[in-house]
Each structure stands twice: as C-alpha cells, then as structure tokens.
Image (cartoon, rainbow, N blue to C red; front, side):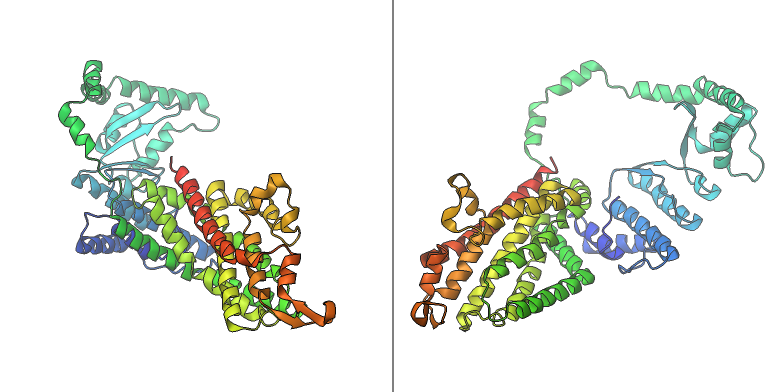
Length: 499
C-alpha cells in the first residue's frame, strides 16, 4: 500500500474514518483509539531518517499505519499478503489478533504468511499448505494438520513450531531433491484421497451455480431493474465531507513541506536580488514572465504524478471523487503561487527602474501572479497527462520553449508564420509580456538622450514591439482563460487515469 509520509499517522487514519458517511463521530473516535492502541501507532512526525536504526523504526510504523488505514475503510473481504513481514513477534501477534476478530462481524479474512511464530500460527482457524508445483498438501482446520502428518509418519518434534515443521517437511532439501519430491508426493497424494479433501470438493460442488440458473439471471426481473435504477453512490462520504477532509489534508501537506517552502523563499529572494543588481535601472519586462514561468512550472510538474498511486488507491476505495481531489490540491497550492510572485515583483520592480506609480506596481503584481498561475496550471496538465515524474520532466521543456519563442520578445508579434499563429493564443508569455509592457509604457512621456529630440513616448515603444494598448484587457482575459483551460484539461487527464 502507498502511504504519504508527509502526514502524521493519526492524521491519515482520521481522514480514513472521516470518509465513512455511516460512522458517527463517537464511533470514529472509538475505532481510531482502538487501532492506535492495538497497533501502537503513536503520532510520528515526518522526520528525516538519520540512521539505519531510525529508518527501520520508521518503516515499521509506516507499515502498521498502512495496515490500520486499510482496516478503517471497513472492507467486507480482507486479503493480506504477509501482514507480519518485518514486524517483531509482539506486533505480528497484535496484527493477526485484529484480523482474527473480523470474522465475528461478518467479514472474510485470507492471509498468506511465511514462517509465523507459534503464537501467531495458533490464531489461524484454517490453513492451506501448498507444496512445490502448486499442489495442495493440506487444507482444513489448523488443529487437524498435525494428526494428518502424524498418520503419514511425519511427526512434529515436541515443543517445535508447527509452522516451521510444515515448511521443513514440504521444502526441497539441498542434495536430497529426489527424497524431498517423494515426500511431497506422499503427502499431497494422501490429502487428495482424504476425507478433508472430499469435504472441500463437496462444498465446491454444492456452491456451483448451474448454467440454467445463470442464464435466467441474465434477464433481470422488473423489480430488479427498478432497483438498479436507484444507483448507490460508490463514495463513503458526501461531497462536502470529502472536500473538507481532502482540502484540510492538502493544506497540511503544503505546510509540512517546510524544506520546500524554505527553499522557495530563498530561491525567490536570491534570484530577485541578483537580477536587481544585474539589471539596475534597465527596465527589462520580459524577464518577469520568463523567470516566474521556469521557477514554478517545474515546481508543480511532479506534484500530482508523485501522488498518483495514493490517489488511485484511495479513489478506488471510494474515499473521494476525482474533482474533489484535484480542486483541493490546486486550491491548497494557490496561496504559495500568489505570495512568492508578489515578493519577487516587490523586490525587483523599483530596482530595475519600472514605472514608479503605485497603481502600475500593483497591476504588474497582479499580472505576474496570473502568469505564475498559468505556468502552474500548465505544469498540472503535464503532470496529470504524463503519469510519471520522469516523463513529465522530460516533456516540460520541449513544450514550454516554443511558447516562449513566440511570446513577443524573441519574435515580434507580426513575424510569426501564419501556420503557427494559433500557438500565440496558447502562449502566456505573449499575454503577460504585452500586458506588462502596456502597463509600463502606456501614456508615458519621458526624457532620454537616446530618443529623437531627447523625448521618448511610451506609445512609440509599444508600437515598435507591435503591442496595442487597447489589448490590455484582452491579455488579462487571455491569462484567466488559460488558467481555467489548462486546469480543466489537467482534470480530464487525471480523470482518464481511473478509467
């Protein structure tokens, strides 16, 4: 089972119980407390594994928490593949004891287990022993296995673990392959003609469904048809409860990734200061769009692809809808992609000599924030469509570079070939660059010896780049449309992963 290491164990289990619409608050709390006590899954903060001993301890706790999370979903059939693997004898006994109690509430439990302790083995009601080649050596009540082997002349030594005895008896011993094979054949042949084997076959025959009855079931009655029309929701909680729980978890995930937030803070401030020193009093506007794109598109491109296995498991367990997960994830990230672009512009804006009026400053901040969120939306799209982090990273640069080149800085707006003209309207570089340039130069007149007669007119600068002041609102609207469009396509790509 996949388990997100960002969350505390008790927090993850809280999410599991919250998603059950039939559970009361009291029953949820009781269930959580019972599992926390029995599995000893105390709250474990997301600390780094500083030593092999620490790593082993944390791995065991993640395993127990993964098991508890599955149990909290209240499944009718539990199939456990070596549930005691990697656990000490005390914890292994606790896990199996919890599993043993489930049949009393109408659930079926099937386990595969290898070399259990005698205490753990004594908890199993029925056992199936498989020999090499998939032949059945024994299947029946655990207490009948020793007499069965004894009758064949294979005696279990006193005070010996029966499980170890069965494994040793059915295993192939080195340099004794023929003898081991003969021993297995004796046991398997004896079981095939035994009364226990006949009882199993009788049960199978008794529960077989005749072909005639299956054919009648193909045509449901009118009452069955009416009942099927009333579809039962596959989800365990209401949409509101799903959104509340998943949004809360997504916010916690962002907060707990403190190293990423610290690195992002350092990156934003460091890059802004370096650019301020390099381009002091040189109003290069395109640099805003360029830097916030590459800083953020790679920051989110691995986000959903990393969580995809967890999302698929929890979705198939009926915990939450795809739209709930996607909306919660993107909304939780939104404050990050508003705050850091604002900090970046605040440091850089006046240092490189842009328009000093306050209203122009805030318009620039808003435009850069929109550009940042278009870039992150494009990153979400790549992440959801790719499915794996490596593929997503490999796709990002080849897809972003063409949009960068037609953004109005490297190629003027009128110089893009006709057959590539449509790409301009997918380029947030074009919308952002034009909007920021209009905000900087519209209705501006200033003195500069580089201009004719020593007077520079902002409208002429815009005309030189083929930017039209009346297109400002179109550019802002284009950025908003790209945010919505890219996120909608990202949602559809994520939705396709579950079908």
